[in-house]
Amino acid sequence: MYKVLIADDEDIICRGLAGMVATRPELEVAALAEDGEIALEKAIDTRPDLMFVDINMPFLNGLEFIERVRAALPDVLIIIVTGYDDFAFVQKALQLGVADYVLKPVMEQAFFEVLDKAVRRLDSMNTSKRYIDWMEQWVVQNRPKLIDDVLGDLLRGRIDESEAKKQMGYLKIQVPIPYELWLLHICWANEREVLQEESGCESAWYLACREVVQACFAPYSEILCIQTEEGAVAVIAEALSGQQRGELERALKEAVRERLEAELELVCRRGETLAGAADVFGAAMESYKERTHYSDIVLRAIAIIQSQWGIVSCPWGQWQICCSSRHLT
Image (cartoon, rainbow, N blue to C red; front, side, top):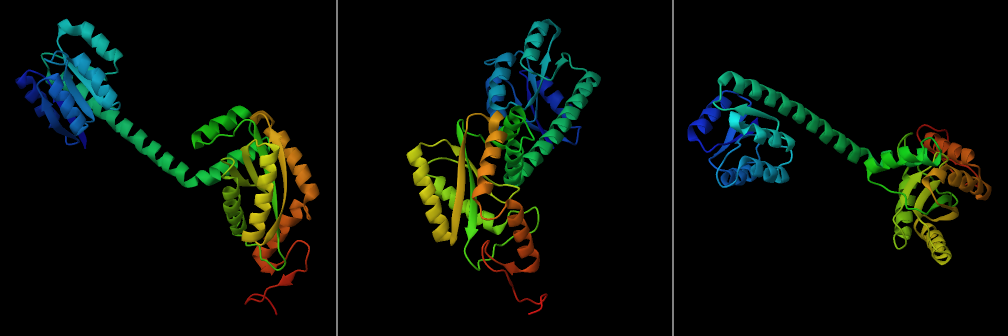
């Protein structure tokens, strides 16, 4: 149901409009006011969806009222009630964003035509608002995956700088300029099982790594952290000094060793623009592949085999088959 406020200094008109509005089941007369100041107070108190406002009211005229109510209630639909002699005021009111106007003396047919149009517009606005609210909730719920997608597409060169900025604007994230791209490879200790969840979901090992990485970077920079298609942990952070970078690298290796019982291999490359992000990522990935014990394809294959067949291993050790109800012992 939509709430309606009616403001007119002529009581007979005010109540007449209220009677016609009350014939519509989807409308509720929330407040009546005989001058602009009272109308403003009641508008802020009741927060109506639709307002009928006399253009000439004492204390605070219709135009002043519209300007002030717009600041407090930007989405309210306003229809002005005016005489033929006030058409110059009507033009000014239309510039202030009023939806329509009704001429005095108010005729029922003309009034209901304006009212029907207003209800249709309120319905349309309500539908749009529900859709926007649903989209905002969907973005919040899926924000981590959406961030992974846009950053992954940027680093792979699948989207250009303009599209990346637009999508990052929707997600309220920003890549610092200049920035540093870190690629981290976790070398798990012997006999430690790397837990891999269903395809398309974040893996347990990645979530653990991200927590450690965020804690280590916190004193230096806010970060954007994703899992690459190759299985690396990619971090985008502010560009650091050589001393800071050395301190952070030592802190990362120590934290991974203590909290994840693993060793860390990493590479870092500096980027100056979003347009060159794919080149920075490509150069970092080449160095990353040279420094890791196994190629990324092999590492991903190991993870899949471990997930599907219950095999535990380290990249350099012997593979063992876990005993379970679906395997022979």
